[in-house]
Structures are given as C-alpha cells and as structure tokens.
Length: 575
Image (cartoon, rainbow, N blue to C red; front, side, top):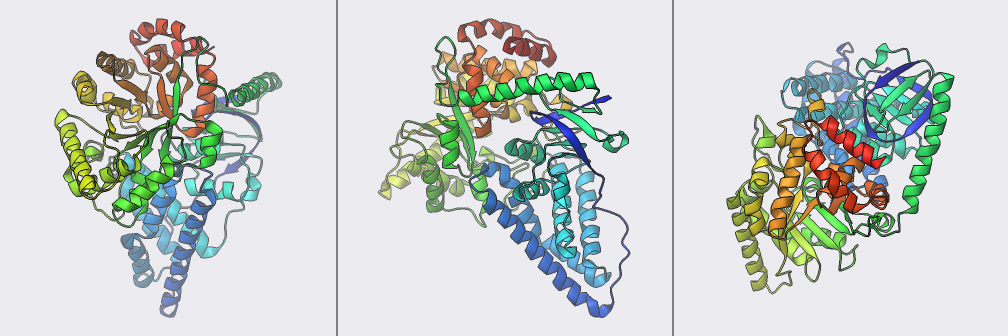
C-alpha cells in the first residue's frame, strides 16, 4: 500500500479500477516525406481537419449550453481562436509545402515550436497557452487520421495520466462516458482543467510528480476531500473498511446539503446571510431554480466581448444583460462588473501591447479609461438594463481615487447621452469597486466615502498581497488565500466600510469554501458570491453555525502567524 498526496480540484471519495494513460502526443520525430504531386492534396486534407476541429468545438459548446456556466466553457472560445489564428495555420501549410511533410507531422512540428516558445517565456499565464496549443494540435491530428481515442475503456474507471486536455474531458463527458475520478501530474487549482473538473463534479487530484514512476497496480482509493487529498495505491483490507465508513459519511453529508436547498440561508441564531451567484456571459434558468441565489454578486462581462468578432455595440450588450437580469425577480440585487480584460484575458480582434508582466499592466478599469468610447457604450447598456431593477455597477482593478472619479465622470456622461436620446435608464444606480490590489485596501476608508459598496476579489487580492502569481505551478504552494496577511486585509476593508455604513461582499473563489465562509462571517461579512455549484453546500453549512459564537474566533484568526494555524482553527470549528 502506498499513499501519495496532491492538491484537489473537486471533493469526493471514489474507489475502483484505474485506466493508466501513458500515451504521448507531441513528439520530435518528423519522418514522413511527401511527393511533390501529393502536396496540394495534403493541404486540402489539413484544411478539412481544421474545419472538422472547429465544427466539433462548436458542437461541444452547443451541447453544453445551459448545462454549464459560460465561464467554464471559455476554453472552447480560446481554442477556436487558435484554430483561426492565421500565423499558426499558415505556418503549418508552409511546412507541408516547403518540407513536404505529411499534415500530421507538420501540425506536430509547428505545435511543438509554439509549445517550446510559450514554455520558455517566464510568465505563468503562458503555461496555460502552452496547454491550449497542445490540446488544439492533438485535436487536428485526431481529425486528420480519424483514429479517435477509444475512451470507452475509461467508462467507470479512474483515469491516471500525466495530463488530460480540457476539451478532451468535455468530449468524454459529451459521449456519456463516466469517469470516476482523475489523478494527474500537471495542473493547478486555478487551471482550466481544474475549473472543468469542478463544473463536471469529477473528483480530481493534481500535482503528482513523476506519476508514471509509481507501481499503480489495479485498484486505488481516490480521496479528494480537503482533509486528506490523496490517492492510495492497492489499499489493504483495514484501509478499505475505514473508507467504506468515510464514504457513507460523505454521502450522508451530500444528502443533508440537498435537503437544505430550499430552506432560508440563516444561522442557528437567526442571522440572515445572502448568497449570490457569479455569472460569466449567460445563466441557465434551471440553475436559478436549483440553487436559489439571492441575485448576482458578480456578472463578468468580458466573455461577451471575447466571443464577438468586434466590440459589441450598445443594443447587443443591452440584449445580453437584460436576458440575464430578467431571470431574477425585481427585488434581486444584480452587480454588473465593467469590462475586465488584459493579462490572461485577451480579445481576438484587439491586439494589446505585449508586456513583460501583463498582470501589472493594462487591464480592468485601466483599459476602459484609455478607451472611453468603448467604456461609455458599456455603461449606457448597463444603465438601460438596470431600469426599474436593482442593478449595480462595479469597476474592476481600481487602484486610486482619480480612476474612480474619472470612471464616475464617464458614467455621468453616459446618463446625459441617454437622457438626450430619450432612452429609459436607471438614474440612481449604485456604484461599487472591486477590492483586489493593496492600494485599494490601504485607502479603503477614503474609497468608502465615494462608493456605495465594496466587493472583495480574493483571487487577485491574494496574488497581489503575497506577490505570488496565482497561475504559477512553481510557487503554487505560496498562493494561499488563508495567509493571515490576506485575512487582515479583508478585515481592514470591512472595518473601513463599517465606518461609513457601506456593504462589503466577497466574490472570489474563496467565497464558496467552507473554512472561508466561517472566517468571513466572523468578520461580519454576510454577503457572499460564488459559482452556482457551491451555493447548496454553503447554505447547508451556514444553517449549522451560530453567528454570535463566530465573532469569538475573529481575533484568533487575525493573530495567527501562518495559514496552517488559520486552517486548523477554522477546521476545528467546523467539526
């Protein structure tokens, strides 16, 4: 028996037989040479494979529409952009013409070139681009030789692999093949694969170094609960019996969560907590009925821009925003965040200047203030969608008061234009900002005088407070939302907001985690926004807590010296 620790993407406990996938795609051997007369036919074959690849991705997007959050499907948009990239496509065709390579070999050669290029760039956002280009290259080759992997062998088993590409996982799910779990070497908690694993509810363990060096045997126990986060190879009888008990407890916990789905979100002593949903691009009405959120705590608008072939106009945006808003009753709060592109979020039709560190460059409100017409167009659409609704505007990546004042000045311009155009709009719309950089934390008392609310984006706040790239695999252990510095920053913001009676919510990934919910409630933060799939568990947890008791652990948390102490206190309380 051997126990291997890793990091989890989605919690669960599964046992069973493994499917060991040692197959490699990208290779260095380029051997097949064409005759001159075959070159044009080979180019046509490549073009057909390219179209098949696009069609398959569009089919995937259509099949998952309404079943998964649009944000989880951004990977498909990214891959379609690569397939339409003239540089990538032309490079492959040149290799077929010039070197007389078979299409498969040309795709592998060019893909390898880009993989190496992204790998050599010392910026972790390019690690995801490396994986995306490999995924796309494999898809083209699959469509060229029509030898699609026989995924049926995976049905009912636990996949053990160096890496599985996001669209491969979507394909498997689309085919109705049930993967019990995934154990893999590559990938971090913020990777595309991790996001999809959560959305598809597949217990997934990541970060198993030298994964093929282990003697995997046949049966394993995959435990992706936060407490253990491990895989057990060839467990002994005693361990199997112990896990039978743990599995029963885990199932009972899930049943209890589902039972609380329709009950009020309040603590044992009657304190009301509001749970909102984070939305990207669109929202399925069924999700609203199932999770029963109090509204939208973060409507990301960038996916609308990323899916378009040009900047969407006012009417286009109004249609999208109105369609989402109308899925809720008029009393529901809807926070729409203005365009937040830059860093790892790029537009296919707008070339942004290359930056050595794009996470510290032109992104969020900085882009909007440099492109005033684009910004005003969006503000007008939001104002119109908010008419007779509880719609609010939120600015991302605010770092100083002058940015806020300029943004508000443009908001007044948008209102003035709508008034002249005799269009109905929300005049008294509330305005808030994302708290995600240290300067916004330190100036929170001054910001509180100028805004109606704060929303804390824990993903970026953690990254900037700890100076740790959240997409980096090399320093992933340092990226920790439970670091006392992060918690102290959040508590500082809450205190500043309370001075002026302003509301504070949390909309980062952390908002949906059990331990974090306890921490936020201890600070008096009772507005949490999360992915839809986390709402039921959050509601069930909150209904088991006593709000007055939680206040007692606040000082303990803020006086901890490291995240280990923080997590121990929170875990013990939850127990």
